[in-house]
Length: 331
Image (cartoon, helix red, strand yellow):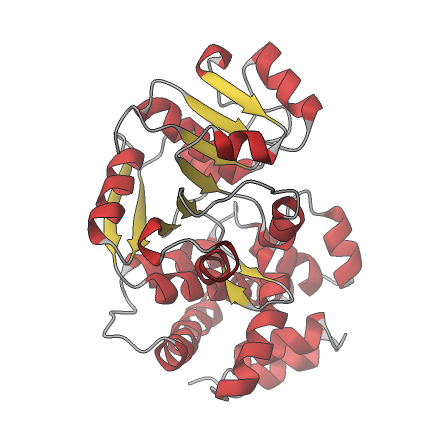
């Protein structure tokens, strides 16, 4: 990526802030879009995001802030989207300038609700962006650990390998190691499904299932993930690679995982609505469970873990018998 190409960060949450930290270390300046003018003003004044990862410091003089999505699109060459998937369409509806000449990078580990489409497919279909100009950021990497500069690994997926490598170089720092891959759909589906499984892992934790069970749960989760991905996006892939298995592990086990936290609350007896209200951040797996369930109605892949979560979240079934029934399918 050339220094002359302007990078635009899209979003004001924790992952957007972590990505902004990375870009601030590799670029002399960059653009940053967030919808809250109050958030922007505080960032300009105090040099940190007032709402997320408040310990990460920025030099406001090196950042051009926007609360108008059209202005940042016009003034950026590469757009890194880190807006939660349930709100993506809401932001894009304000867009009046074309995206088709931009390089688009999705850091959204979710799926477009209602459309039931992967983020890359959504941008390609509705915004006429060539597949070779769309990349994704995947892999086991929590924003909180990026903020602490703990060693993390990212995989950049793109059908254009040279483009993927260029973006990988953009994101590489002393604590961020990067690699590239061509399996865009497989990586995206893995990023979506690991949130589903992390919620169930949390529910089981809340119900006081132990570490022995969690090991069996993760084993069955990766097998279920493999069955689904290999059916909907056939390709010769190694599901034990970090971008698949590694991301599942960190999301299912980490104390930073909002999906695991959400699930733990449900396992402890919170209603779905109450758990959502108490969460400060979006649990993408809640929306993913419904979307993947609907997609799978066409493919009929055996997915007992997904089905269990769907019954708990959307059919309001009690977690205790639902999880017990699920455990009886495990090996």
